[in-house]
Amino acid sequence: MQTKEINGIEYIVYEAGMILNDKDKSFYVENDLDYDGDVNCLHFYAIKNVIVGGNQYVRGDQDVGGNQNVGGNQYVRGNQNVRYIYLNLYCKYPIRIDRDSDNIKIGCHEKTSSEWTSFFDNEQKINMNPSDRNYKKLAIAFKAALVMRDMLKLMNDKK
Figure 1 (cartoon, helix red, strand yellow):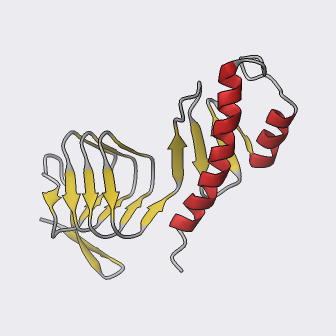
Figure 2: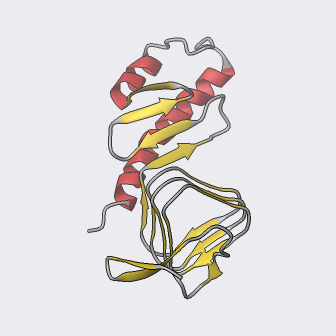
């Protein structure tokens, strides 16, 4: 079994077929991970994308370099280093917030937050009329994304 040390934490390097269910061990994943079961560990560090089909319980810190999708509940007791948050707030399009830029992606359109603010203030079209109920829900979801972006930055602030 190969291990890797990062910031004083010893991780077990994940190999295909390995079960990620030991609350006292930390796991390191180098490649994309598509895992059907629950993940239960001390610390979790992934370089690329992670899909967890079940629940995820991390007693310590979690770092994910790519996208993460957890099918069940996710519990992280320590710090969580996350670049993107995807919001699906009962509106027509998902919203992606980027920690490292001022960009927000709505559906397949990406703009800065000020460009989106202007877009909604001026009631510009995005495959629906501004008077449409779904447009109004999307405009409200965008406002929630602005608040969530502040949370994302704070989540990643190690101070």
